[in-house]
Image (tube, rainbow, N blue to C red; front, side, top):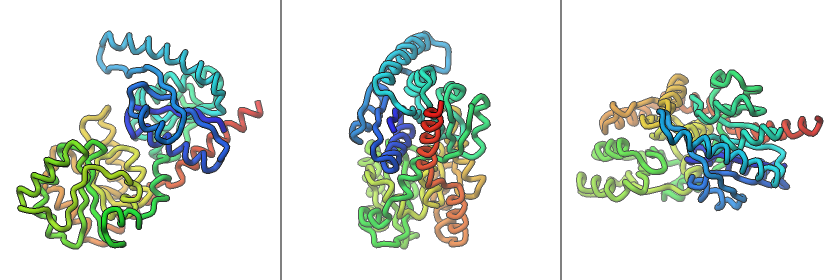
Length: 372
């Protein structure tokens, strides 16, 4: 298959696209790819590292209040459509996949207008503006949360696939995760992550909680601060306690996150859609602290979907303290029955076959196109 991928702005849009490419390449080794992204988005640096040809267009998102910048955005969108049509005619894809972010708008719209089969994948429980716009033009809308297809009333087809990042972590080796952390196999691991860049509120709660970590000496706490918070966090904990607790490791970043997740017993994290797909695929109980600084408060809605299924506990940021976080961790990690039930509930929500389901839909669309 010849496949064009588009998605950008954040890792939450880019990594699902790369997971689809990996799965497609595994199932159809002769596949060829082109990734069309934004000039300034994270995709411009991440995608070339995966040895996928990359083309950039100049596009920006709409502001949610009246602004002359929105007029400029419309002009850029129209130019982006023209550029995308040229790139699509040159590459001649069998199918085009959009995984979110405003860069998908002109690319997927151009594909629809050229009659090329197209799919958009929505990671969140509440869809973004771009995917809502595109849903009436594409062949298929793939959703990550069961029941969220109702947000796309004009879609031709809704397909519940889960998030393709789930496939990536499901295949990870937990023993490599233990080894990378310097821990013996089958250790109990509580992983605390504030997102790729870290989160101030989680950072402050971890510093506040650090004196209590030693009470759970049989559990290894791994706190991934984000590069920007690393030095201050490590210093603050050491200053407060005199030394770092034996069962706490503070890291700036984890480069092998799928493997580390595979050996994790409980995770404390934001509620980005890709991360939730990963932890449910592995059946990891979670304490979720939704970011309040996202469009439509979609992280809390993501988190509540897990909480309603009893796979997670939610602490909203105003209620987050060292004490509230420690209490939640202690309750889950010292009650084996609760831990097992949360793990089972998470696994019920997981879709480890997600990437395969999307590739299967791509193939179906290509076959149907060939019959016309």
